[in-house]
Length: 280
Ligand SMILES: C[S@@+](CC[C@H](N)C(=O)[O-])C[C@H]1O[C@@H](n2cnc3c(N)ncnc32)[C@H](O)[C@@H]1O
Image 1: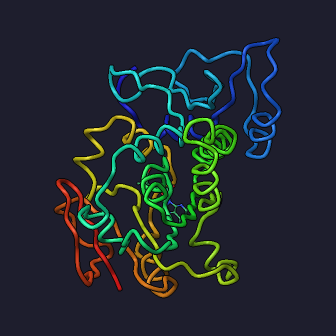
Image 2: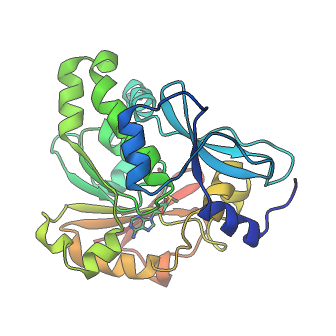
């Protein structure tokens, strides 16, 4: 099947299921997770293109059956927080030189608290965590949340084997994942009861103006863009974040994109293809 029309995406989005072969029982943690997010179980895969969760090699993965974005198949998506962390820990980043860390205001000496309000695949969360910050990540997509929760569970159980127990303990105590819409929580004033972070980081959904080239060059991102909730509240999120962050708000943008909501940042830090707009 080629082409991806919005009707088929809507149908597929609303019929995501958990596939597991008949006769095999998934681990209780996975069954509970699927039940919590009302994901039905199926023993067979439909012939049409479909998206489903499957436990593969001990990881919960989102499998795209068929080629809805053209002829290229999409590799199953899982969120492997341990691999991401190990990769970043090996890099020996220069905190004083990397545009992202400079934008966040990290010095390497103090433990800055960062709310990653748009966790997504948690790549940026793990990067920030790897350099010593205290990270609280929020994600609202019911499609991504089970993948992230599975990743968090595997990180809690397996990180010490990979990086040593002392380092793992320090990393785990600095990370929290909240399966919630931060903006809705803020409107419900639940967030007001939480401790205000020094920094709020926003990497909103790729929009047609700002992220087109990046999204089109990445088939996974195109799929996620189609199946995640449309991002129409990013400007309000910025306004709210500016009030709530103690020190600054950092927004990730494509290098030549307009600033979020047309709001001029206080200053920016540029990487090769990405810009970080800082509001303080
Ligand atoms: C472009 S992705 C972020 C990618 C992420 N920085 C990473 O490294 O993988 C944006 C994500 O933010 C989530 N999101 C957008 N607004 C949100 C909100 N108000 N609360 C929680 N999650 C939100 C979307 O569902 C989407 O998964």
